[in-house]
Length: 233
Image (cartoon, rainbow, N blue to C red; front, side, top):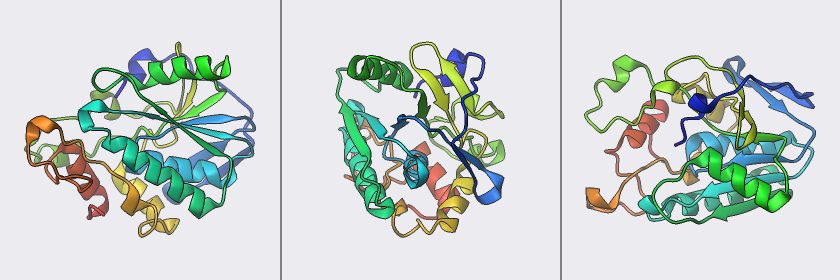
């Protein structure tokens, strides 16, 4: 994952087309322009796309970065998420692009920005990203696994950022953790529809015992998923 906050610039201000207040007073803004949504196949970005698709008035351009280290499992999950969101929202204006590239896990923000400029000849006015807070430190200290918590997710941060190689980034989940995300899933009736097609696991070939598209239940991301939802699927 890119260190988005390390590249932050002063927040931006665009006219809000519509604003929804979700569970626990989480604010979700919509903008009257074509938008980009970064989709990994995980819980947070799936919920992000679902809410964008509910009310966004223009085209929604979904981007997934193919992760070679994960044997492209994130591409399989992201495709399932996009198809399920289309089904649930009946929104036909969702266009999914998978970006394949050489090497290990890519720098998301920079790659998306470069590809958007190449594809559209300009930045998207708004790009939604599903960054969330870490679980509390007293929870994570009991996880005997490699730490993928990312320190920038520990603190309250601005929901709006401008990245020099990307453009306008909107992160509505940036100040909530997985239990808040789970509450929104419950409130929107998505636990038995959208949640089961998401995939959080970051199993790597070096770990052995490939779980396929099941969750390994041993990596940091699996533990975070279970902590938030009390279930894997």
